[in-house]
Length: 311
Image 1 (cartoon, rainbow, N blue to C red):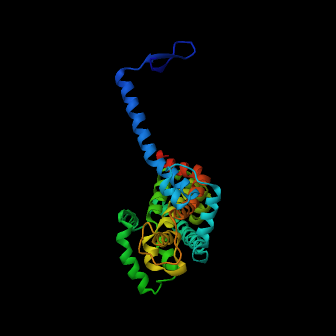
Image 2 (image 1 turned 30 degrees about the horizontal axis):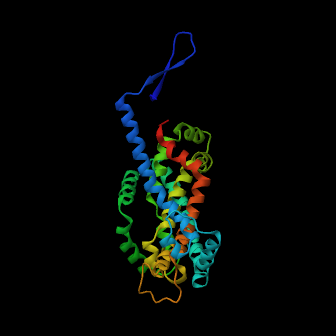
Image 3 (image 1 turned 45 degrees about the vertical axis):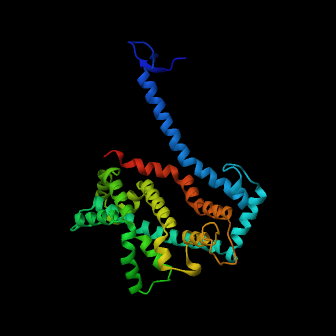
């Protein structure tokens, strides 16, 4: 059976029709290579996720001895769930609550600061504007790990080590959000519309609040999502600046890992966590990001494509 491609042909005064042409050997090989590469990448990314989803349904022995993609039982899933939330008198719930508090508090400050800053850099001429924009770009390109030491020293000088503000305030500084907002207002918002509001007597604050902000819903969702994901997944800084029951879930996962005999044979803890329970904790820790993405994906797509054309 010969593979065919279709080509649309338009004749004068006639309805468009499709003509089928046979694929050349080179085109057939090219398509086969593309499909093969896509299948390899799909397997590379999907199979570990499938294993992780199935792991909490098994006992530790089943996880090590049974097939990697076999299903255990719902009863064992419930047992692993109970074991996870019983660990440390329910400390996993505390870790999740800490992550939610740190992430949402930092997100609120990020939006309050980043959206007006990006708007001002894009649409308002003022002295030092270019310097601020260049500084934002430079800071955005600096790896976060390179900033941990100076941030730690600054927080220590302010006596905030161990305080939730030591996590929230550094998370609130999000130069990438400022740059995204700058690009959006520079390309996707009509200056004529803003100027019309100014001509009608609206002040700059009113123009921003009643004209620019309603138009900026996609970029607000995009900045909010990226900020929340970065805050939720941050490990290094919270590991250094808070401890005890104040740690977020990402640091808590490392604590759980230390109680898994397979990874830490010398563990002396009275409570041992098995691999299926650790896998369940990992799934629960990423669930909030997945849920937010599913509910906000329409706004995220609009935000990522809004700056594609200039008014």
